[in-house]
Image (cartoon, rainbow, N blue to C red; front, side, top):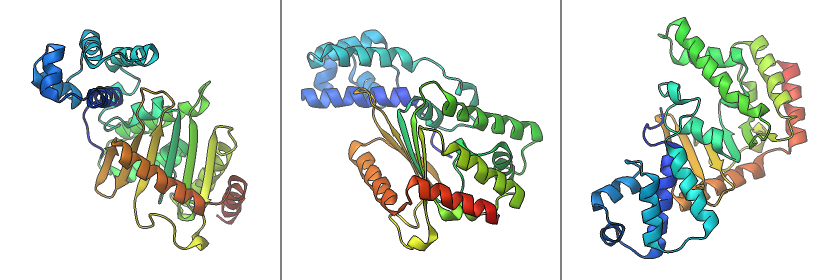
Length: 282
């Protein structure tokens, strides 16, 4: 499972405040003295281990020098939002770390999946089977609860202003008969229908491509934002769990990998045709 810890908003705020201190040329000791707080408090704020008040952030911004008014308002608004709870708050045992919050807030999500259909595009039956197999000792009511959480996440596809969703899947995902032929046929039909939404792109890397970028690696998700106060985040999934990458250079490297994966993927129309062909064969 992914790490627990600060929310996506708190991570973002902490990273922004650290970046502004670095750009102002202050070390933490000097910055804390200028702001009028203990250095340990500043360390915890910048580390995402303490939520600052609006007054704290205003003092910090004043100490580091004038920021343009749009950026300042954005940071203050972000500070206010840190303490707000989203629909996912009661389900922290199911949705590890900041994943659901990032998913909800992003302007664009780019995802590469190696083995399974992504959760946002799964049918209820497909999702239920995966959850039941992954957690064989869970009672039926808890499986129902986890399935409902996954279906609730999918509501973002029907939002008035949904994010741009771009998926790259390997052909193996389509040919893996999860739950048998009937269930997989329904899942492929659902995937094909989702790909017709104007804000959704589904592209397939065919088996006959042979080698492709990052072959042998795990899944990759990029959460991307338009706002100047939002920081892009990469989520990397491996067999031992997932981790968030927020370092700007590492996120850019992940974005470059995704771009290289896209070079191996079929165009959207050819991908849809391949999904349809496999659905008929299933």
